[in-house]
Length: 606
Image 1 (tube, rainbow, N blue to C red):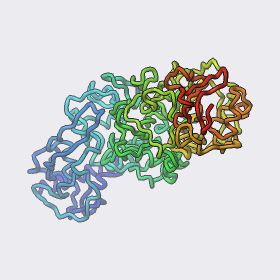
Image 2 (image 1 turned 30 degrees about the horizontal axis):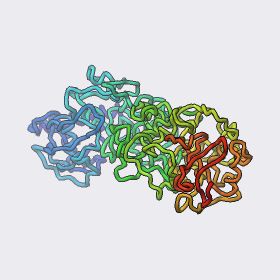
Image 3 (image 1 turned 180 degrees about the vertical axis):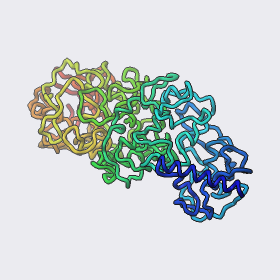
C-alpha cells in the first residue's frame, strides 16, 4: 500500500509541475472521479488508470491497461513510399490503441483492476485505420519527395522546437501527441506535442519545398505561397474542423485533411469533393464567404465528377484512360493553388490551377508535371485518352463533322499547328486568311463592355466556362464547373438540326437576334456580328443567318481534325453531316474562291 501511495504522490507532483508550465494536465485523460473525461472511475489517482508501479503488463511505461491484440487494417496509398506494419505490442502506439481502438474496455487495469467506470467513450478509432495517418512504419524509413530530407537522413524532423520527434526511429502516436498534456496547443484539445497553427506539426515531416526523389516531384512544393496557406478568411466553428483556429491559413492542412478516421483517400475529409465543399459550398462556414463553386453543379450541364467510378487517386495515370472523372483535384492542386485575382494572357495556366498535372499537346501522351499551359490539363481527358463518351442527353447536341479524325472527341488534331485552320488554343494565330470580324477585345457577359484584349491565343475556358464567371463580369466561379448552356459553354450557342442529312432544319432562328441572349452570343464574344452580316469575309453569310441557320451547320468550333480533297478547311468550314446531305450523289464540297457549295441543306440543293 505504501508503494501505491508513493505512486500517487509522484503523479500529483508531476501534475502540479505540468499545471504550472502549461496550464493543464491530463485533461480528458483524467479518468478519476474528479476528472473532466466523458468516462470516469471511482479512484482519485488519475495516473493509475494507465500506469501501475509493479506487476503491470511487463511492457514499457509501467503500463497497466490491458493491451489490445487486434490486427489493424492500416493506411495504404498508391503514392506512399513507406508501408505500415502491425504496431509492436506494448510500444508507443500500442499503448494508445489499448483504449482508442475500442476493443478493450477502459479501466481494464492489471493487477488492480478492472475498475468500475461510468459514462461512455465519446469515439474510437476502431481497427480499420485506413483513414488514419500512417504510423508504425517498416524500418528503415524510405525517403519521398514530400518528406523533409532530414527525416530519413538522420532521423530528425524539421520542427525547430524539437517537440515533433520520431519514436525509436519511427512515426508513432507519440510523434504528434503527448498523452499527459491536453492543451499544449491552446486552440486544439488533441494532446498535441506543440501548437499546430499553420500546419506546424505537419510541416515538421512534410516538405513544402521543391524536391525530386526517385523521379517523383513534390506535390506540396509551393504550398507556402498558395491560397490555403495564406488566406485570412475566417473559419466559423460550425465548420467543425476539429480546432479553434481563426482562419484558413491557421487551419492549414486541417482545412482539408483529417488525421484520424478520414473518409477520403490521402486523409482527405471526404471522398472527392466533400473536403472542398466545407468552404466552397457553404457561405456560413467562412467569413467572408469563400467562392461558392458548387452552386455551379446545380445547373443544366456540369463536369461529370459524380460518376460511380469517378474517384480521383493521387497515384493514377495522368492520362485518364477508361477512367473518366473530373474531381476538384483533377484540375486543381489544393496545396499550391492560388486565387486568380488577375488574368494573364493565354495560353498560361491560371493561378487557381497552379501545380496541376497535364498532358503534352505535341504527342498527346507525355505527362507535363506541372502544366505550363491551361489546355495541357484539359488534355488529360479530352485528348488521346480512351473511354471518352458523347452523351447528347447530358451535354447537348454534338455535330457529326464531315471531315474528322478517327477519334472525333480528341481535340489535339483539331487544335494542332498542322490543322488547316483552328481556333488558336494550342498555337498562335497564324491564319493566312484575314478575319475582319475579330474584335479588339472580347466582350464581357453583358455583351457590351470590353473585356480582355484579343491576342494570338485563346483559352479553353474562353468558351467552356461557367455562365456567370467572374473573369468576364459575372459573380460566379471561373472555369467549366457548370453552365446553363450545352457543352459547358459560357454563352448561348445553337446547333442547327435536321431529321435526316439534307432534310428540313427543324430549329431555324430567322430574323437574327444579335443580342447577348441570342443564338450567336458565344461567337459574338470575339466576332462582330455586324461585320459577319455585312459579308466582309463571305458573301453568303447574311443570307444564311437571316434564314436562321446556326454557325455549326458550316463551321467546326475547334478546328479541322482531318483532311479532305473537297473541303479545304479554310476559315474552319466543315459541314455537319447530320444536317448537310449530298447533291445527286456528288461529294459534298466547298469552293471559297467561287463562293459555291455542292450539297443539299434544308431540302434545297446547292
